[in-house]
Length: 322
Image (tube, rainbow, N blue to C red; front, side, top):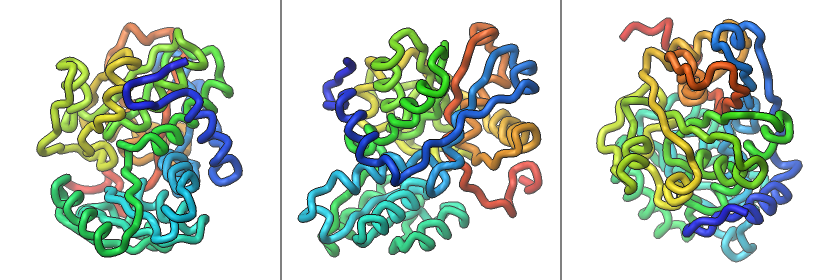
């Protein structure tokens, strides 16, 4: 079974699945004959937009919070996040009955801020840079004694995220390809571990915005190349690739490709119009890859992880002037 230098094993994924059962949703995998015909492929959309707290992040956060010992959990949990992990962690902490302290960049979407508050998270805002987020998180940890739950560079989080792919491959066992969004890399790394355990022949391809393409550049270089000033509509994918996820990605992921923001917006709108599902920019990134000409994917059975559906409906990108 897959193993990496980070220690992310198939057994950890299985433990995560048992730990979060009943605490998160088993999300549906949907199809569309219209989108199949347009893509020239068979598409299977794993709708994590229907997940608790609105994204796949509920899986990793819930696993991480419930894996803590009573002593570790007593003072609460803390993180820094642009929104989806923040809301997921606040929800998981509420389920366990402990406080959640959240650092969010001041440009986080209003819908994501509201979700954190709704789940009872205590928010501290900071500048929209990784350095500012990490500095504010360190101050929170010192002040509260809380346990840090990193958004993606954490084994328990990655193991939880992997359960989305476990479900997808149970729902559609004969996939040829899985397209997965990549920001910090927790979802992609977890997906790769699950895929290699359950169907080693399936191709696992990461997709990221061209304005935040550090994962693609890092995979080519064989080392992490940090994203200094990511510029993309996909706010959930602006994070710099994590060390633990990259160790998995480098060994188990077949490729990482990029898509432009205009393609992401087109993909969002098409999913709204045809599939009638609310999808945030990050969640539309895998489908955006199919709006570009990719002959190698034609005729394939493709799983697409729609990672989330949290966005400001007042600011849909096709209704807001630049």
